[in-house]
Image (tube, helix red, strand yellow):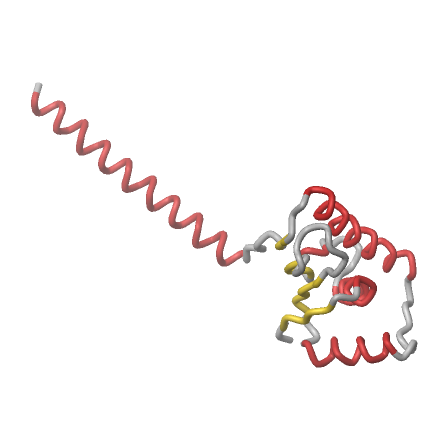
Length: 141
């Protein structure tokens, strides 16, 4: 299932989408990609950009159900937890004057594997250079 970006200025809908697409052990950053005050710091309008696995069309259906009062929540405690976390980000941004918050980049296992290989390659290249320099030093003596 591919993920697509969905934007809303409704914090409750954003919290619901985070609730739907994460479990208690996951971080909201897995779905929340960006929070911003488009009108500048200290303004009331906040836009949430979410990376929803269900796709933006399904998110629009959730939005329609929300607006019609038909959206049901099975675990209110978990929903409130997601809402409080999201609300804390918004409050912190407001208090510090930050206008844009972006989730940290989540690195895949393949990325980490490639990074490890690159680091090992650089180490071995450095060791070869050091050995050559030591050999040259010995020859000069």
